[in-house]
Image (cartoon, rainbow, N blue to C red; front, top):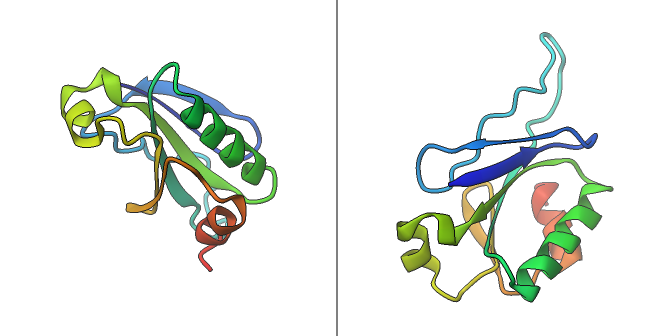
Length: 116
């Protein structure tokens, strides 16, 4: 399955993930820099899904105000994920917890990634 993992600043990369949609570790930290851990966000999606596209727009909009690591996972690329999520996409997990299904509230999403 292919994921896209990125962080604030527009730097992103694609790669193969091990496990059921687990995000790749962030490598953007500088040695000795005191910095808060970024929230880990996974967007489970599929092609030709208008709700998935709308969810991604919301996440991208919030990303302009709050930094977080993002993995976008196409559930159709993994038979287990296809069964697990069926037609329930998009689904957004924040720090390993299911936060949204179908629609993403931008205000609540921003609070979740900021840890409030």
